[in-house]
Image 1 (tube, rainbow, N blue to C red):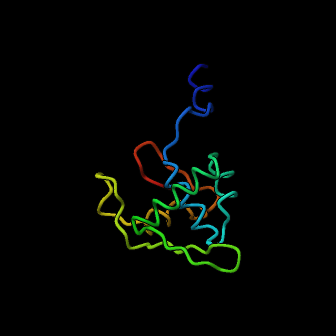
Image 2 (cartoon, rainbow, N blue to C red):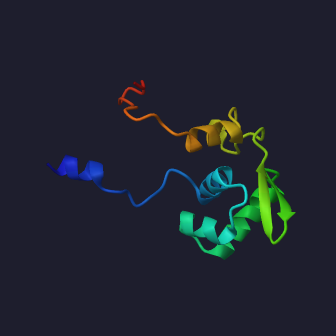
Image 3 (cartoon, rainbow, N blue to C red):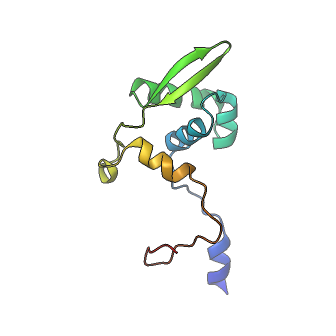
Length: 114
């Protein structure tokens, strides 16, 4: 019974860094406001601004002013900075993270999907 409860409890950690979560927000809405990103990710607007500046500084995104707002472009061909995923690029990661899964899609413990 304890195992069933543990399966449904939310862990106190996340798989995705704040940087990855900010990229997902931008991928879903290139005109998103920093305030909205912060709310979705659960960080302050100031932290969001720092992350966006870091992503832009590293070349992962570019910002273009559109009136009073920024419009972001993700440079999808940039390699992931993580040692275990350097052969993949940002676009491939975002394809997975922003894809709409068809209903009924499951993944078994061995890793085969069905």
